[in-house]
Length: 86
Image 1 (cartoon, one colour):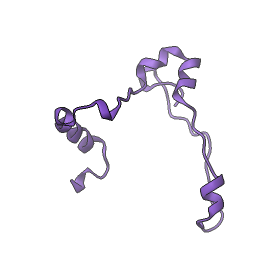
Image 2 (tube, one colour):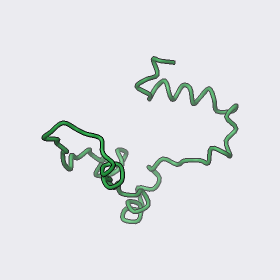
Image 3 (tube, one colour):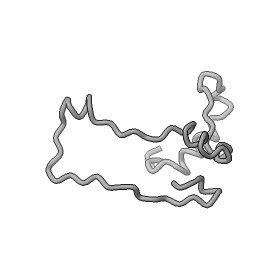
Image 4 (cartoon, one colour):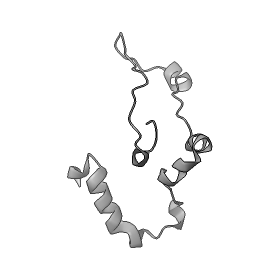
């Protein structure tokens, strides 16, 4: 994304990964092949106005699940592509 959607950000393809052969599991892939994603705090340091649009995560240990269970189930049904399994 070039910016948060709320600020007019657009999805941009930055590359493609194309395999020219059959994939094979390997210890090398498990231990050495990594894809680094930009950390959100690095984005915010460059564009502080984006901070309000980043999702905020709470410590699950501090959440009373009984209070939020119904809303979590509804959210999961709305966003989860596998919700039909519930």
